[in-house]
Amino acid sequence: MSPVDCETVLSNLVEAVVVLNRHGVILECNRSAERVLDRSAEEFVGRSVSEIFGRAVREDGGRLLSHDQPWAKALEGRGLQTGEVMVARDLTESREGEERLRASLREKEVLIREIHHRVKNNLQIIASMLNLQTGCISDDYSRLALRDSQNRIRTLALVHEKLYSSGDVSQIAVKDFIGDLTSSLFRLLSAASLPVALRLDLADVSLDLDAVIPLALILNELLSNSLQHAFPDGREGEIAVVLGPASTSRLELVVADDGVGLPGKLDYRETETLGLQLVCLLTTQLGGTIKLDTHGGTVFTIEFPESGVKGQSQ
Image (tube, rainbow, N blue to C red; front, top):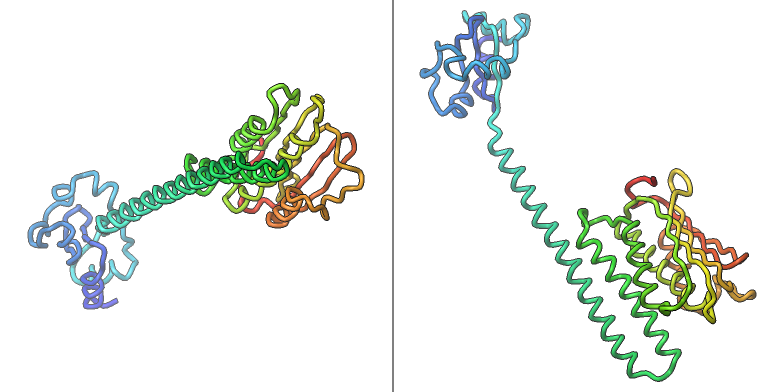
């Protein structure tokens, strides 16, 4: 590299470049250095770098330039015996850009939380209106259908409530969510004297919105079915909800009760019951498979891929 080429390169660099001799005296700087330091070259060329920048800057900020590199040879060819070349860049604009980006992300998070909050409120209003409508209906079948619809809407409202209060607006901690959902359904659907125990065994994972909504609705249908039909005439029993790894890339949800079981001839895949139809459709939406075991009660096992899932079972 010729001396002319070296001077052209130095003068056009975005980085501030300060050339020192072996004694730490400033020999030359480029225009970027003048701009960053807000002073002309004449004010510091020929002075000690420690005097201008402080000892720490030279010790920590300097970069040794090997004397067999082209720049060193070109500078020495101009009579500049280099010892170090200090290179710096003004990061003010970059930092300001990063702060603007962080502020924008914070604003978007607040907006997303507000959207979840409003969706939750609107769903709760719809559930309340259905509850008022239920009081105007005398037909038991219609009343039950409206109540089931209310519970589905409340389940969706709970999803949005959890997302609103979550530290991550895109993820829901399954353990806490299922605990709240099961408690709500037991409170709404079981009689105070119903001697049915609830057992939860849940992996510590988080699900994204695309996974948690179908999973929540599946749980709503299966738990509602057990609470309404598995324990007639005050029969004692237990309902278990288990969620854990089925393999390295799949999760397994088990909803089981030791109640009276489903009717022997019932094909849950072909039934006209809306709840079980929804379970099959939502399992497909999850990309999962479903199995039913009716020996000693009712056990639904749903296996689905871990896509959209964060965390590991403990």
